[in-house]
Length: 181
Image (tube, rainbow, N blue to C red; front, side, top):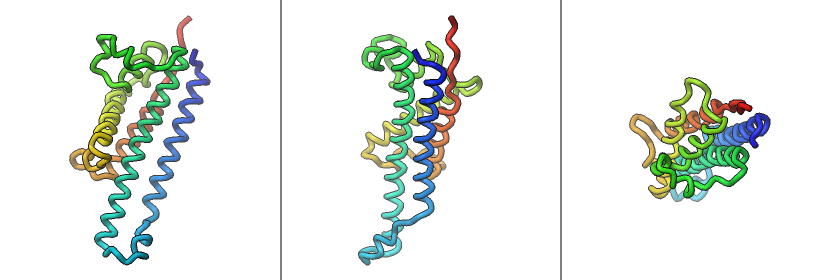
């Protein structure tokens, strides 16, 4: 059975992992690795800029996938401790209400049945996190091309910041409701 202390510990662990990614993002913004390219003298400034941008987009791609993995792992652990069994989406998809849902949506629904939900007024975060997972899936299926997931009026950095913000809010607003006896 999941206790409030277990819940807090798992949320804190996810928070720390997200903070590590944030730190990596800040490090990437502060340093440029173009000096490596300049040593070879094979590229001009424009080519160096393109190579650096491609590298940043690959980092955004990997961080997007890692952020989703952190949330999925958090929800999986919460599910396992709540139900005392491993999450089996294939089995749960046999339930008519779950047939068209993604794993993240099934996990959310199953946890909501017990004693986990989002804080009042934050219900739209369930949809937003599902969209982040859709972006992750599109990213994976489009050969890791970050350009394929950038929404209108965003650039790669803005898109990643939006994803990071959604993941942080979702984790933060997840709450434990005391089970009734």
